[in-house]
Length: 117
Image (cartoon, rainbow, N blue to C red; front, side, top):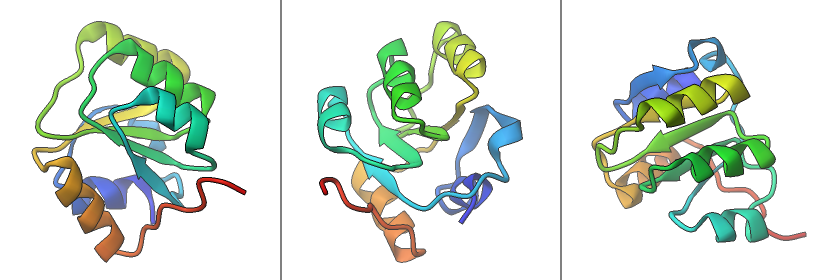
């Protein structure tokens, strides 16, 4: 699955990161708690979240994620977009809720991967 496939599955609007659309995605996670993402997430390519701040981009960057999907129609501001562009992370927004977004991705074959070894 690619970032573009996720965009289509979740009916996302691409905010930035057009160059990342063809990147392969093997797993995803959904969380509004960045401490949980840092503590428990391993080898995830996509982060789904309803939290909209620069810390989300910093966390995704630390975890080498390709893309952040903001759920529930949340929109990042210019500071978040600038940071994502600087860190080469795609940003998308979907009107779907977190549960529905995760379910749609699961239904289409994307898994969460292992959170702990």
